[in-house]
Image 1: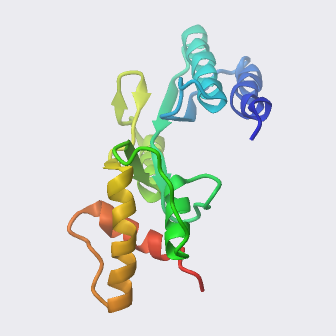
Image 2: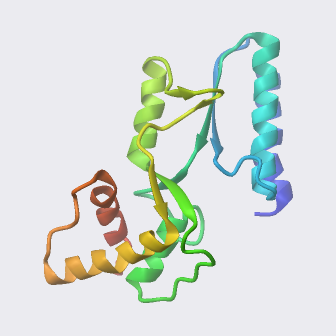
Amino acid sequence: PCPESLSEGNFDFTKVLLACLAERPCPVLFASSVQAGSPTPYGQSKLAAEEVLLRYSAETGAEVFLYRLPHIFGKWSRPDYNSAVATFCHRTARELPVTIQNPGQLLHLAYVDDVVEELLRRLAGPPNRQGTFCRVSEVFPITLGVLLALLPAFARRRADGTPPLTASPFPGQHYPHSMSFLPP
């Protein structure tokens, strides 16, 4: 997306929403990103939206729940659009090359169902807070190199009928996700 559309979708829309709430302030939950504050147009638009939300909270007393969501993986993700993990799975399943610049780069991944569960928990009670920000409780740190090494291993397990790796939650959740990208 172009920088203008990112600003419109993140910052400008947030300002319009808060203007609508000015008469009757109410709590707001905002899905931000770990990219907030990065020098990219996306990161800058997310940070600007967070700042206007914090001002809204300070001026009105309304609670604001800012979630700087990690990279999300799971069902309904689309390759080459909203998920690096989906892109890697799609390309690996089709034996297409995957190029990364830094195999040691650390990603923090959250399974989409864990994100939804946290947001539903927030509706029922207090959020899982860490300072200013709310957080998803189940986050998996993994390097790009380790993530890419898992994908062919998953495919081999499927091909030879070996059960998926389920010793920890991440491989157990990621295995069906990665298999969903196999060609029909």
